[in-house]
Image 1 (tube, rainbow, N blue to C red):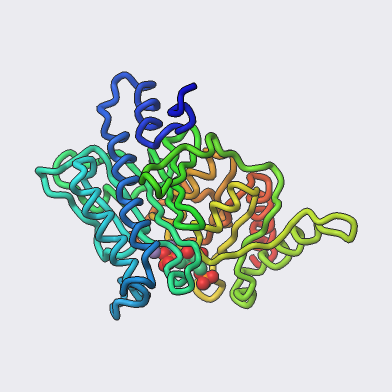
Image 2: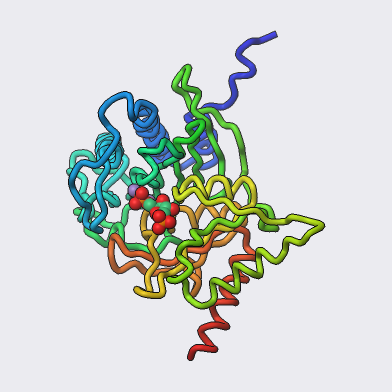
Length: 339
Ligand code: AHG
Ligand code: MN
Ligand code: MN
């Protein structure tokens, strides 16, 4: 009997197996995913020590969106930036924590462009609740010097996307457009192993995730829609339960596994959502579609929104296809009635 047989497939082996399906591939995508895995381990190590060392709390600075920057936001951002630039796989980067896009020095230029939220759910850090990292990958567009147009692109141009969740275990989920696969970090040896392959949404919604304290700001269609979903429960049978963590990445991951619908609709006061298109909504929308689900702003497909700004916010409804379509139908009816 071989004792090595049960070790499972590592993240690196998995990306190399996938690369072998593309005989002309130069291997940069595989390297990029592997390097994101390295950054994830470095960030995870810091997250696991938060509270033990002085990295809880705020830096005292605000980011370009007027939000308080937490120390772990800064650590995660610097780690990803450094690892990605040194990887030689990227030509431009965009981050929630950077005012402008980052152009990579010519000596290190690579084939890809990455937009990322270095630490998602950072308001949850101090209470030790699950947080994460989200990333979107595009082919490089500019031939020579990168410009903002390398990152201001519709989500359907993504060639890969993923996230890392620092939860009860650290998991990394990624897709290159065919399947969505999940890897769990074994902290004893520092390696990611494949733990769930080809993740798919259930057809039915079993979990509803929405911050109900935002009722006063919801567009008019959201309240009747939420009621319609909850009304699927009756005395004899409970079909739906509610779960809302307040870390998008953790809410999304649970929903992908359990069959959940997540909504952060546009705010009626501003006409904009809270979540950012480039590095929160687009990568998760790409993953959702590959997993057989859907993602919408309420007005249309997330992946077709033409971004105008690096930090643009949109409404997000994401999860099982039929209920995302139902939400769009509610939104359309309300818009007609209000016209
Ligand atoms: P970030 O920490 O990257 O700024 O993102 C926070 C986001 C998201 O993770 C979360 O689901 C949402 O903000 C929660 O917003 P509310 O507190 O308004 O519900
Ligand atoms: Mn975020
Ligand atoms: Mn963030």
